[in-house]
Length: 402
Image 1 (tube, rainbow, N blue to C red):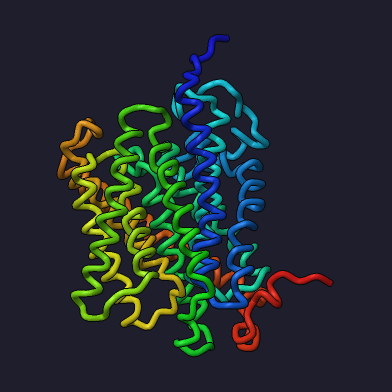
Image 2 (cartoon, rainbow, N blue to C red; image 1 turned 90 degrees about the vertical axis):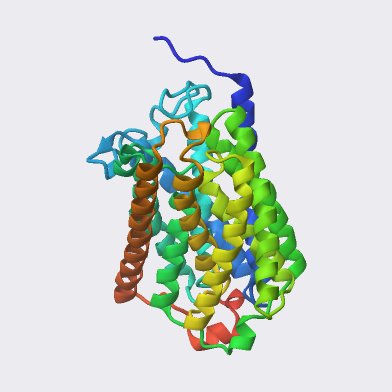
């Protein structure tokens, strides 16, 4: 049997990118932990780390097959194809990284799914107990992440339509963001006063976490090329450009509105730019990333303002930043990538229509299924925290030794 040759340069590049994306999960733990209330720090950080273990087991026991296995009706992959890493070898796969070991692709994609549910934890901070979180991770991955990943990256119906998502704007940020919206509306408001909710435990830790996210995001986006080439370099440049312009735009918008800004706005504005550029990082030239960053700062800031007006208790603004950022960036592919040599098969108006339709389907699906998952679990068992637990802080109850 003959196998495709492995490119050692591409392989080394993807090993680095995979390690960088892996670092984003503890980075997110520091980011959210620093922004969380005192006595909830270990809980929200622990939720990120727990996802690593639970999700990896699921990925090995059929999850990878559901996402990238043989297509079944455009909806889901065959879980038996790669069950217990069957056929996941050190040889390349023609359809998933033709110059790198298939095992490398398996691991790179694993880092993506590992971080997705932890992104949501910032929205429902303080409202889920340990049992509820574990059940959410399992059911959310099974019913939302794996199917949507297959639709877009695994040969499903959206990919067949021509829908594009370079590094996870729809697969990760839109699903997590609109899943978060379902969580905050289903679980309701925290019982603690508003002033208490907005207290941050350690902004230095949040800044360290943001820096780790910035670093990891280069691997997150550049690795989407699956090889060390011009597209990876383009994604790298677009990523940092959008980060910078979104941050400054966010601060300008806050200042113009007369509300002023603080250090958290600096961190949040940069993340908004990263979430928005993610789906189009490898499809647009860095000069267009300037415009995308500006749009990110405006749209995400407006979404956060709208959330506050509606009094939704999105503790760390996951919907406004990640949800609306990923949603917006996915649509912008159809505008800024349509005539780019980086997406040569695109047809302007058709691509824009497919992007709009596809991301709306993903957002509605993530919102609806997350709502059903939570209501289904709540019908059978208690997963929400009590008023006393919220006031005292979950660090005393989430992890217990008996």
